[in-house]
Amino acid sequence: MAGEFSLQLLGRVLVVALLALLAIWILWRFLPALGWAAVLAIATWPLRQRIVRHSARPTAGAFLLTLLVGAVIVGPLIAIIIEGAREAVLFVQWVREVRETGLGTPEWLSQVPLVGGYLAAWWQAHLATPDAARELLGRGESVPAMLWTRHLGHELLTRMVILAFTLLTLFFLYRNGPQIIEQVNTVANRLLGPAVTRLGKEAINAVRATVNGLVLVGLAEGALLAIAYVIVGLPHPLFLGVATGILAAVPFGAPVVYVIACLILVSQSRLTAAVLLFLFASVVVFIADHFVRPALIGMSTRLPFLLILLGIFGGLETFGLLGLFLGPAIIAVLLSIWREGARPAGAGIT
Image (cartoon, rainbow, N blue to C red; front, side, top):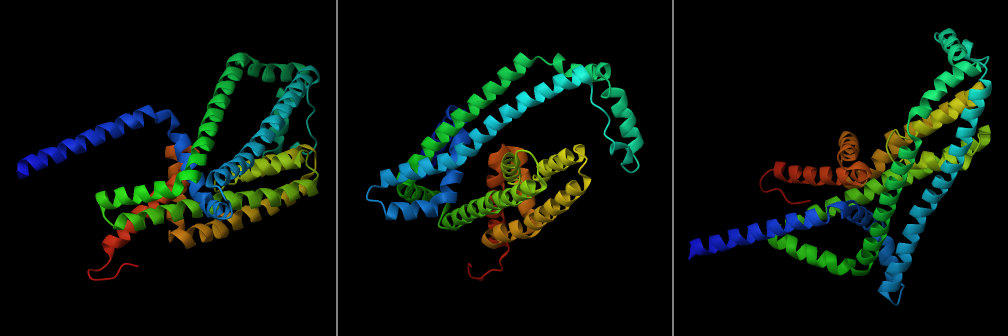
């Protein structure tokens, strides 16, 4: 009898595992959309609870919140695409002008310490005259522009499809979230025991804290540096601020934008403004990445700063942008299991 029960149990496990693998295979291309929807639902769940509480119809509240989240995500993307296309046209025109007239060597270039003479000589040889500029910039035309444009359009279409399914999944999570949570807790308790509920809470807290620490702090960095861009008189300060805020979601990502902004000022022979912008932006990023972010994430997850960074960058390397939030959640769950296993026998659960 016991042997028959064991065979039945083994058969059930194999069938469930096979069905799970088949489901993953079928949904493989949509897993990023499901993951993003889960992250967004976790991050905005307190807002969902507040809206549903004051809404007569949960479906209407879920629909309105999905529209709000979609507008917050799609709005900046549309602005970046439009501004990027405009800048691309201007860049192509600038390249054509440089190839026809050349680009004179800036006076300040030779004054750069240590490498100024080398840089000025290289500029004079490769950009100062039309023939040299045509030889250098003409290499970029060897790349098939048609293939590059087609690849870019394909990638953009793929991302838009993922975004559409993300918002669709998010709507159903907002609407049916309580039932889904209850069912997940029931199944998890039956399979893994009561401790899984606490581990799930650790993962949820880690995702929410990571969103607050990365996205909100990144947006604050972008807002502060956008003001600085306006003060120093950079062109398109709003676009640069949005780009800074997006890249600042990754620790140490904001310097990519503000260093480019400083180089623009240097190219305009405004060295003082470039140095002041660089110092101010570096201080803002240093404080955000070394104090504000670790405090926001560490308070909720009880993760040390090193593990926070490892989780963020390891998740980014493994899962892409989605890994920014999954990495710390996985590390938080593993650390919770470790702490429970390392607790002396007889100690209470905290």
